Structure formats: structure tokens, C-alpha cells
Amino acid sequence: MTMDPARLRTVVGSGLLAFPVTHFRTDGTFDETPYRASIVSNIENGAVALFAPGGTGEFFSLTLDECRKVVRAAVGEAKGRLPIIAGTGYGTAMAVEFARAAEQEGADGILVLPQYLLNVEQEGLYRHIDAICRAVKIGVIVYNRDNCIFAAETLDRLAGTHANLVGFKDGQGDVEQLVRVRQRMGERLVYVGGMPTAEVFAVPYLSAGFTTYSSAVFNFIPQTAQRFYKAVRSGDTKTTDELLQKFFIPYIALRNRRRGYAVSIVKAGLRVVGRSAGPVRPPLTDLSEAETAELRSILVGALGDAMH
Image: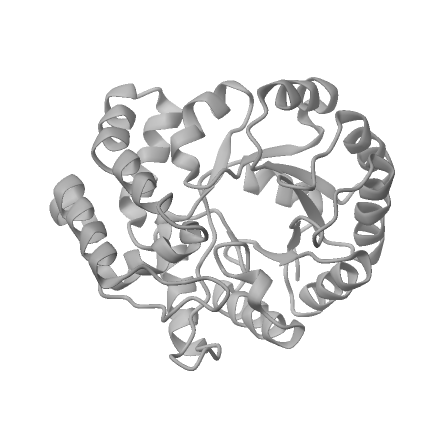
């Protein structure tokens, strides 16, 4: 049985979120067995909800049938222990199709990634999210980023119509917008940090009312990810400053070296710790051997034995 949307909102805001990579074989096909093992690892390391597949899970590279398989595998391993939130996106008709498929496979919620290509008016965004919320009964979280930026008034209108709109994930970082949304919506939504390498933004986001964020590095250094999250929540600036200096700042410098590396570097991290998830799919490109070696040095230098 899937989780009630109101319960999903509470659970999502209660701890650290993760979005597992999707495992591919060398020929690019979905590799389900190690993917299932990674879901178990995410659960055992204390994530409170999983985005599967999300952006780091290369949702944008998956067919509808593959998304069904990914969601089915994640739900099968979760066994109700934590919610699985599946991605949807593209144009409205396709987004509805992906959302319905995820619900059919047992997902507890939907993360709406930005629509394909177009910059649109707020009325268009309203109709897009309205159609998705009407298509499913499970919880819906909108992803505010790129060409999908929501005015506070649009969110208020949507929330007034759809009880299953439960969350606002931000990947834009516009403080003025975040304040407007938070002041308008209050506790009606759960607020999730969704910037690339969200740890770098976690402290200021907490002051803006974002109690949680989704961690990409959780894939390969879950204990460090949890340590950082707990330090953020407790105000332990000594720990957050140390980890930012020693690991996250060098990590994002490497991440920013090439377009698309926000995903590629996570799979490289898994290779470094001996749990390869295979290559990224085109049009993404993998880190070079030299860059992977550089990532290994960053991890060893910053974390030592804690890198696993």
C-alpha cells in the first residue's frame, strides 16, 4: 500500500533524502541486480526517502518501460520501509503517462522534473502540474529549477486545488523567490533543497525553512553524508566547515570542470569505493581516468578510512 500524501510530506521533511544512481551494463542496458543492492544500501544507511529514478538516476535517459522497471525494483526492495518517489517530466501528456506508470508500480510519490525545452508562462505551469496531480492519487513534489520556476501565487493556487501537492524542491537558489514561496505557503508544503551538491547550500537553506535536501554523494559516502546532515541540523559549524573545506569544495571544483559532471562524478565516486554502477548514458560523458584518480585523491585526503 502506498503512503498517504500527507504522511509523505511529513516523512520527506524528517531526515536526509537520497537519489540512487541507475545501474547500467557496459552496453547501456539497465542492470537490475546491483541496482536493487544499492536500494538496500541506501535504506540501511538511513535515508528517509528515495528519488528513484531522479536526476542523478538519469531519469531523462530512461524509456517509459525502463522507468517502470526501476520503480518496480526500488519499491520491491523498499518493502514499505521508506517512500519511493519516482521522477516524471517532458511534456504534459508524457509526464502524466510516466506518473501513472510510477503509481501503478507502487511509487509513493512523484517528483516533477522541468518540462522539456520550453520556457512558459505561469498559467502553462499551472495546467501542467494540475494535469499531473489529477492523474494520480499519490503525493506530488514540484522541482523548481531551470525553465520551471514557480511563482508563489501559482503554488498557492495549485495547493488549493490538489491535496496531493505536498512538496517544493528548489534547484534555483533565488533567495527572494524562496522567501516569497515560504511566506505564502507556510507549512502547507515540505521544502527540499535540490541544488547540485546540495550540502554546499544546506546551512543557508535551513534558515530559509528547508529542513532537508537530497544528497547525491550519499550514493558512495553515505556515512559522511549523514554526518554532514546531522551537523547542519544541530548547528555544528565546526563539522560542516571542515567537511566543506576538505571535501565538498574540491569535489565541486572537479564537478564543474565539464558539463553534465554533476551526475557523472557520482558514478565515478561509486567506482572509487569499489561499487561500480556502470557508465553514464549519452549524452552524458564519464570522468576520464585521470579525473577519477583525482576524485580518489580528494576522497582519501579528506575522509581517509571514512570514505566507504
